[in-house]
Image 1: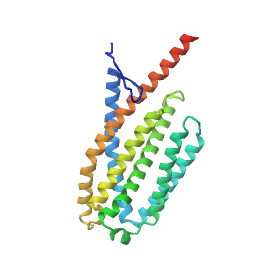
Image 2: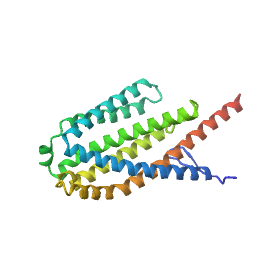
Image 3: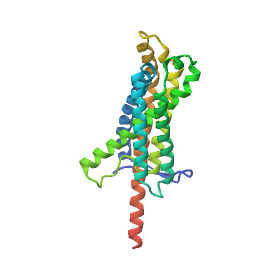
Image 4: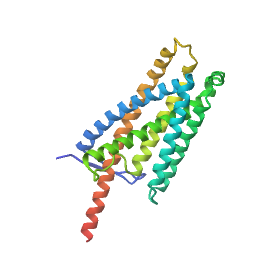
Length: 245
């Protein structure tokens, strides 16, 4: 039998339940989150390099960001409910940020970019890093939810469904993207000569990989925690309703 510890958090109103099931599933979620965090770090850094150095890739990612941002707008407008209105507005802001990043990529000029100091580039790369991280996370979660629903049926609960889970993932996604962009701009990776660019990128990745792993692991465990809290809350409400009936 699972040993259960119950406490009450006055700030959030959540009843914290520490069970073997939470520890087991939370550990798996944390490991998956660490892997995804490292992958996100690698993809963000490589994308920032390509956008900075190649006019073709800056145009390509610019168009891609605009398309992804518009798709997110469409998805959010297609699922409008009063309960999720506040959450929808916040996601709309991030979708607008992705579209803005796409426009920024289309007008990226290598000569103009290289004339800026590292501190001047940091805000630009922070915005791009957040957009890449959010677009990647949103697309990945959408894909995972679709695959889970396709394999296990339509009654399967999605990977992320509660407001707390959405806020958690948004917080860590924005934090990771912002940190990766900040480190990339501060290290001036794109300003290195062609034969040193790989070493500069490795230096940036060595800084970002541990951060991606830690933040991804915390986000993964936190997502499973809120997932079980949401499930327990629904079960309690159903039980109370049945008792009253």
